[in-house]
Amino acid sequence: MASVSGLSSQTRTFSAVSDLVRSSDVPDDLDALATRARALDAEVRARLADVEDARTALEAFRLRYKQEVGRLHEELDRLELAIAEAELGELSRKLDDAGADATPSSAAENAPRPARFTSDAVRKLFRDVAKIIHPDLAQDPHARDRRTALMIEANRAYARGDEAQLRWILDTWARSPEAVQGSDDDAARERLERRLAQLGEQLERLDLELADLKATPLWELKTMVDREAIRGRDLVADMVRRLQRDIMVATNRLEAMKS
Image 1: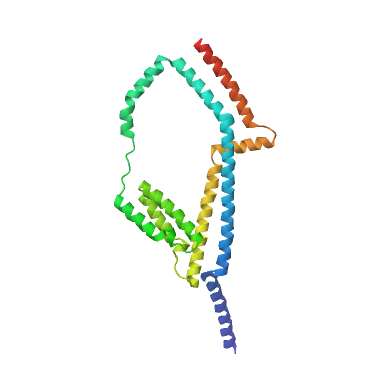
Image 2 (image 1 turned 90 degrees about the vertical axis):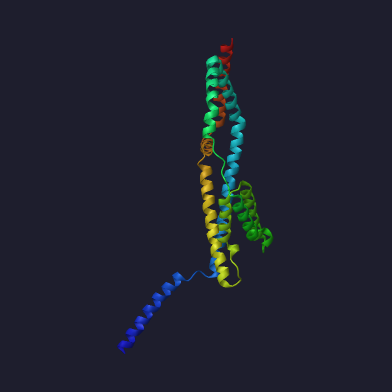
């Protein structure tokens, strides 16, 4: 009896360990994968909205800055250039002439040489891309949109003679959910897993794009302007006033030099 009891205990232990191993090795069922894909897809859409909102806000600030501040900067630059030319006079022209004599040979030596492309290889790659991912081969609207976007990129790469980009497009398609054939559970599971990986990569790219937008000097200036606006101070108006004062000073100086 004791040996039977010991055997039963060992069997239960082995069964528990087997369950643990099986639960970690066996992939999620299709419903769970589909649920994760829907959640990640929603997160990607939200991040897309964040990126679009940031881009729109930055463009609106850029336009305001250009209209109110940029034109004054340009006017001040023209005045300062006129002052510099008046001060330098003939010496400035001589320096320009000397620089012009030396420029052609220097530019010719440093000019980048045009890249050489293997035209036959590019044409063959483009034919391979069109044969595999042409939108007419799509089975549903989502797949057609995906194929259309890749074909547009392929056309641009072909026009540039960009062999590396065409290879990247082929590789991207080979790893995509649409490239999986079949209608059984294994094929469906593979498509869902690839879709999850695709969405994860898209989310990473969007996070990087958002971070790049917020790392620009214009975004930093916008953030500063927004922060001061909360405190009741208009930094853009302050910039306008300072530039108008500098323009007046530069104008008076230039008029004095001319007279």
